[in-house]
Length: 219
Image (cartoon, rainbow, N blue to C red; front, top):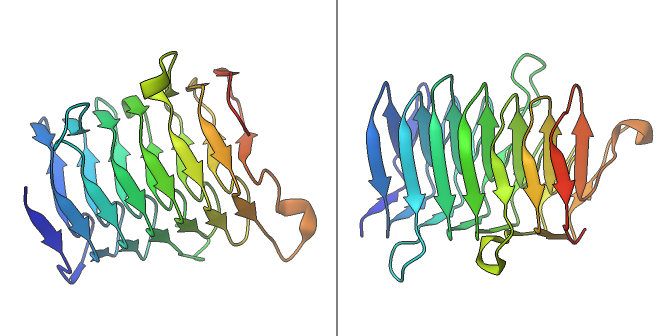
């Protein structure tokens, strides 16, 4: 595997790597760490592409850690559609941050940020100790039908010790769309807010026009 590490500050997005505009790619066995970007996806940014990140076999997992996006969502991984698809499987996603407090681009999805009709699946990952300013410390999902977890034991994501500093969804935040959350383990996540009524959903926060399913999770 490769190490995409400490690549300075990208002026737009994807400090570690950017996959976009119809790209089909498999990203496996890499270390993606200590990258920064001014836009989405400081570690890996997927834009209208079809990408597999990780996999079920030994040596296919990526370690995506300590990346930081200064102006948006997806400290570790970001995916934006329409037409984008990701399969994020068996990765270790830790210590990533989306700390922006700017009203127009608040920090969402410290570990993973899914946005604007990016679909696919998030299975079997360890998502821990990530931080976002506004929403979804571990994972933020907006306007997507993505699957988070599944019916098999190996599908379970472990989402723990993530934090939102001024908002909702310490572990997972879902906004609109029809994502399916099934059999994940979501524990010891945290939210806070200057006004307590805005700091809710330490494990899971669901807001907006949500029409998906939440079943069999440990929260």
